[in-house]
Length: 112
Image 1 (cartoon, helix red, strand yellow):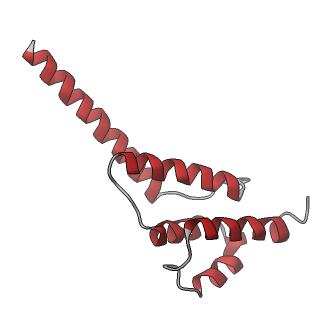
Image 2 (image 1 turned 90 degrees about the vertical axis):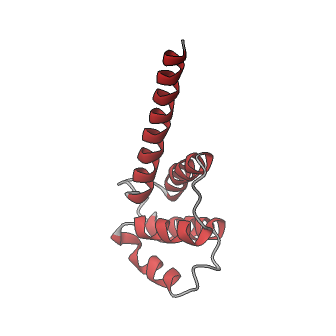
Image 3 (image 1 turned 120 degrees about the vertical axis):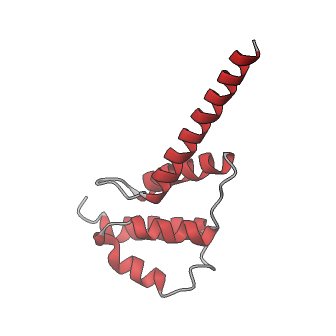
């Protein structure tokens, strides 16, 4: 019986470790997908951040802001450069989200 519990416990910890590693991988390679809106990118990114936090891994707001900015395609380059001229440690995740949503609506969706 103890052998079975040990195998079950080790299996569970392996599954958790694998899941954690996949989340870290998703975070590290995070990119905006073609046709994805800012709302969608933030929802997807927030899910990864939330899941990582459940494993005890957290990223500062500044790290999250930088990651989002690096994930944007070249069509966003002018906005990224403008934002990077600021102190990104003072720009909150929510402020970035609002700023990018406003930019998307006014500058990138005019062909709609």
